[in-house]
Length: 162
Image (cartoon, rainbow, N blue to C red):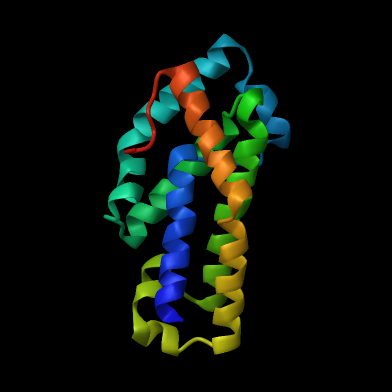
C-alpha cells in the first residue's frame, strides 16, 4: 500500500504536467482575456516550462514541489477562458492533494518513505490514497491534455516531454 500511495501521488503530479495548472478560475478567467492577458499567460507558461520538466523527470524535492505548485496556482490565475475550466479542475486536484498531505502531517516525498508512512493512521492513509486515485482520473488527465494543446497552439509552447 505504501508503494501504491507514492505511485498515486506521482501519477497525480504527472497528469498535471501537460496542463501545468491550478487556480480558482471562476472569476480569474476574465483576467486572462484579451491580448495582454493572453501574452502574460503565455509568458508565465514559458518561464515555468523548466520547472514543470522536473515533474516529468522525477527530480523533485519538497521545496521544488512547493515552488512548482505555487507556480501552477499563479499561472492558473491567468488562465484564458478557453482553458479556465480545465485549470480549475487541475487546481482543485492539486489543492486536495496538498490539503490531504497536511492533514496526514506528511510532505509529498514522505509518500516514498516507509518509516514516515508507518506513523500515520492506516485508515487515513488508505482514504488519502483513494482520494488521490479519484483526483488523478480521466477528467484530470483530459484537463491537462486540453491545456497542453492550448499552450501549443496559442502560445507555441510544448509543455510535456512526450
